[in-house]
Image (spheres, rainbow, N blue to C red):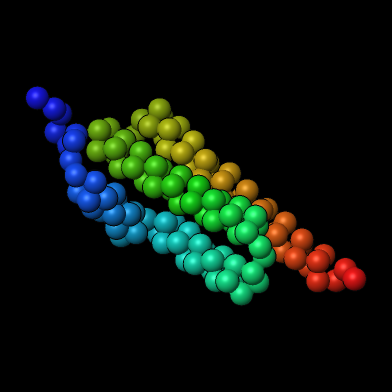
Length: 126
């Protein structure tokens, strides 16, 4: 006998994953803000056409930030459900997960700024 949820068709597993994205969108203002920032970055890629390498770097950074926020949201929901009263270890876990999102967000801003600097250098050289 297999555990519940194991061996399900791929389409069903994708539906579960999209439910998680919808929950994060509904519950987390920071996820919504990051999605809007991601759309702005993708729009900038479409306009600036920086080449495949910079495009790949920016898209990977977007994916990492959004994935980290989804993990942060999942961790917060689980900890709040399992341990609703305030506890220091719960706060540390939640703060560390939020810090991971912050670190990746900062790295993505740096990567985007490097792309812009490179494009500016290419445009002004020559």
